[in-house]
Amino acid sequence: MSAASRVFIILLLAYFLSYFFRATNAVISPDLRRDLGLTSAELGLMTSLFYLTFAIAQLPLGALLDRFGPRFVHPALMLLGAIGALIFASAQDFFTLSLGRALLGIGFAAALMGALKAFSLWFPAHRYASVSSLYVALGASGAIAASSPLAWLKEQIGWRTVFEWGALVIVLVALVVALGVRNAPTGMALPRSAQGGNAALIWQSSLFWRMGWLNFMLGGGFLAWQTLWGGDFLFKVRGMGSLEVGSILFTFSLAALLGFLLCGPLADRWGLPRVLLSASIAFTLGPLLLALWPQMPLLGIYIIYALMGFTGAFNILSLAQARLTFPTELTGRAVTAINFMGFMGVFLLQWGIGVVLGLGNYSTALLIWSALIALAIGGYLPLALQANKRSL
Image 1 (cartoon, rainbow, N blue to C red):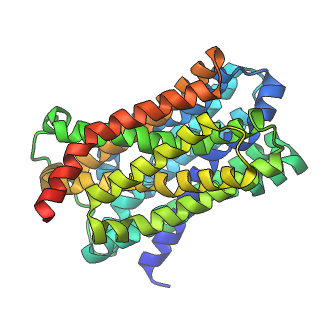
Image 2: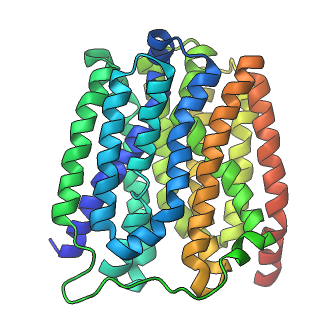
């Protein structure tokens, strides 16, 4: 095995854990409601804190990775995540549970960006895109582990024990990262990012906001549904048990893995803006149909969840579009900014849906969400139309 392949596999273990822990609440939400008496608003806020702290941590993360490299920054943050898992496992009230969830978000903040920095040094430029997309697709299998397998495991040993053992696994993987991942190949110094360019131009750009708001709604909504409300909907509206919910979430996550693998080739073939726009429109059909026909046949539920998983994964194309849209000296900060918008979207949508559920029902929440995605698509539409005209 080459040194580059070893770096890829080790970092992939950490990204797998990131996806697993962000998705657990979709399966254990009935246990959290029962054991701690959480309301929908509290459940949404607590779950969303993973994404809030994750997003905030992105702001200083770039400078830390530039100075110290992923070998030290990534495992140091993971140790905070392990502490968070232990706090979460022992929580007896909403505040303690929220603290544990927030620390888990910080713990995995470098799981993607740290790996992307490492790959830029360990792999040749012509392989960077394929290696990065494969990394995201395989890491997303952590959400598969947080579906049916987690549903079975927590029935055997309880959700608290799952998190206690999970903390140990986080520590072990952090140790493997620290010992097995070098920042750069032998003889290559860790380069510093270019300081040229005015980063304020990103936030002042209408192009950024068109892309950013779509990622806020599509990427944020995709994860908000996968990691909490998609499971809670099945528990509360459909009255399903843990194993059946786990099976449907497994379908969602498997379809998402396929979407991560195929979105790049499809964008190369048909054009990135056109493919991203089409996927966003198809994704919107999911919450809309669930709002209008919540008691559809079981096969329909599986189809809708597969559709949302597959098309929601296309949100990753927003990062690629940011690289193509802004000058070279700004691409790193542009990608980080788009990523920030996506995770802020998860935070606010996950919390917001919980607030709406406290005041109304799932149909109301899903209709509001569908309308918000449609508005974001409307804002993004000019970018797709301009790209289509250039391709004619």
